[in-house]
Length: 384
Image (cartoon, rainbow, N blue to C red; front, side):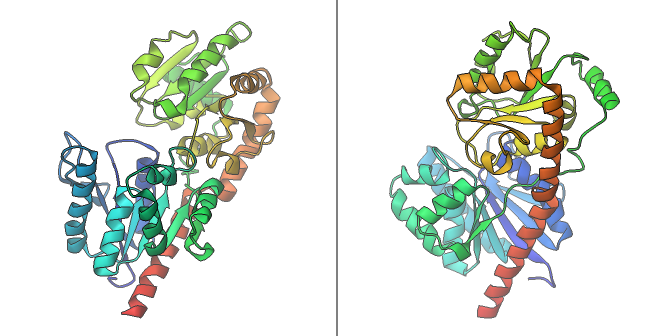
């Protein structure tokens, strides 16, 4: 430690300018951590077209080589991380995901004794633990992580239960959900909403349902579009706004569903959310969706599948509507309810904002992480 400052190396599979939930959450947290005396460096993979090093918003970002097929790329990333960690000499390592980042952090802990925090990004099918179990020597790797990681961060009750299931003791499991910037993502007046709609070329009076996220199979936007097609007979003036990009984008556009607008990847999603009436998240699996938290912070009621951390955030019938995954009829019924009932939307939206302010602010997340880093660094110093 330098004075009271803590040096933390953040290990993550990808980082800006690549966008995903984990990348966006980390980028939003770093300035707040810096205000709390946490000096951070980001160690990530170097994808095509990106430089080996750059400083992004005051944080040094080191991009490590990932040549060849996946197993070789993973091993190269883990090895290259050791050289960079040896140079940085952080007080704490924070691995974002239980795959390569956690393996690299675990090795550094064995070499230098640096305490390690591992954030589990996803639960359920294709979540971190499920993926690791299906990898070569997966169970042995899970056992090693269980025994050697100093603290695990669960962003949902589902993930916390999975960590319990592999034997992580309660004192090393911390429930620290993702946070959202409640000032940037905040409600606007009816007049401001109309102004935003005009600026964004959105219809002034239509009820707007919005989805924001990566356009990948697990988000099940294709299912949402098919359901939206069926809703058009009853709700002819409604609009489905889809924000984001990904491998499914071309196929989704080719479905040619009426009253759907694709915004693509946008620099600032807040005005689109503030222009909308409610949010929809039809995912098959989630960790804790940043897009969901942003929508709730804006005061949008949400229709979402009851997966991952979503049931921790949404109380069915209070601040949104929960449906079981892979139940298209239930999802359609929930969408119909919110499209038809303006007072319900307004009531749920108010409670959605209140819940975020109380439990999911980015400031609260930064406070809890900074306290964790301080504790681990002090414990390490006391042992030396």
